[in-house]
Image (tube, rainbow, N blue to C red):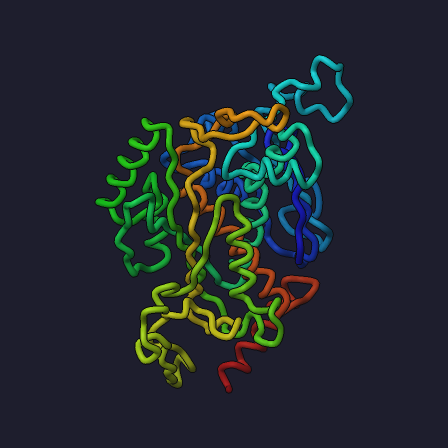
Length: 387
């Protein structure tokens, strides 16, 4: 399975084409729209979320609520396009409109300058329009379809915020459905009410100072069978693939599995997950410090992965920059921005992780229809049970 996205933050739409989905899989726009709505929520979001009410239009590959085996095409319209039709016109425009809303002062922390130099663009809007986190809208739509695929096999995906700024939430071991319920009720997607109030206060303070906050989000995938991924080549290791997907999210700068960087200060005898066996459950682990992955493969325990999001680089208290035309020092240009997008980033991370897990599942149990994959999966589970 693979997909590509296209579109700009102020263009007419965002588009994704997914290839390799099996036929006869349930796909409903309502389920995709639910994930899109989740992405738009969260304390600390900016004005763009009041403009866009994202909904998906499925324009290929689905008929009567089920995939046909053909590529699935998704479109999410940008409502703000109405105010940008001349600025973002595909067709040539009159000379006086060419420089409208031109960006010539790159923002520190963004792709503006690097992209301008790489692609030889004198208007940095040609870089920021595509590098914007608005692109994650359609990646969430793709992830929603991956979640629907995983749900066919009883695999669930959930997430929670662990930290915003200097405020850390107490991590609770909860059944996944309970975790989902509590985080959906929280403006900052935590289960710790004390931390919730402190996080919101920290966001308010940062906003009043014209600053931004980052944080840490955690994703859990439950019901995953043993053996997804592989140890035999570097690019088939599932933890490596998940890590790449996580840090591909705009503003993400780090990733860890299980106890993560804490492993550096933990002795091996206290780190590794003891192997158990019973007639009823087969092989399993006493703990899950590895985060459900060993040797690039799933262990059968839940996948637990955390991502670090830096503070958003667009500041209302703008940092110094250099004008690419005059080479003089100026204050960087300001684009509309959030104060904190960590809760929304958690939703994005859930969906990009769901895609990678679904992709690995399809590689392991592949077939052209959901029925064929189910037969392959059932046979494999029997093999594992008899091992």
